[in-house]
Length: 264
Image (cartoon, rainbow, N blue to C red; front, side, top):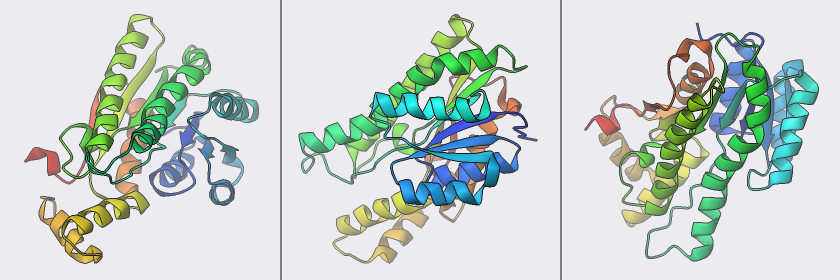
């Protein structure tokens, strides 16, 4: 199940965390993967661990030229592109009162502009690959549970991730209407053990008036019905599912992997 034999994927923010784990699971599932990131040394190291099935491409998702180069690198090396995972994102942990215009513009440039540029610039090769694929091509956009319910700690982050969720639905409908055979779905992780997850805990710790992350961790755990925080593998498995032909009747959908947070 969830096999990706013969597929080629481009994953952004793939030097570490969810992106790196997604690339690893995709290679295990039979795909060839281009890893995009701005963390060049770490990205090259991550790609090297995956062998001949992976390459690294410098990719600042806010830059059109970088996107064109990364797509060209993937298709030049592997001959096609079947899957795009818009994973790159930033979390600034700013309250509405504390956030500056520069903070907002930074969030928008990565979390929103990056998804728009990736979808637009990868579209021609995804559409071309879909013509020779039994189930078409796939785009997976990383949103968040903060794109479904409000965030008391970082409303601007929630605003961008809500935008990703609705952009996903709209792109899915447009591509279906035009007969492109490109499915577009979003992934909504909950509290996750990752570097971004640590940023969330640090924000919660500050709100509790401490620099100690443990009280914030315990507070987070109390909100998770399943009783533990997620890990990058939990989320990456969901991304691989959405990228695979096993989800070929899903488009415009949001897959929530949050331990039950949004069920409350």
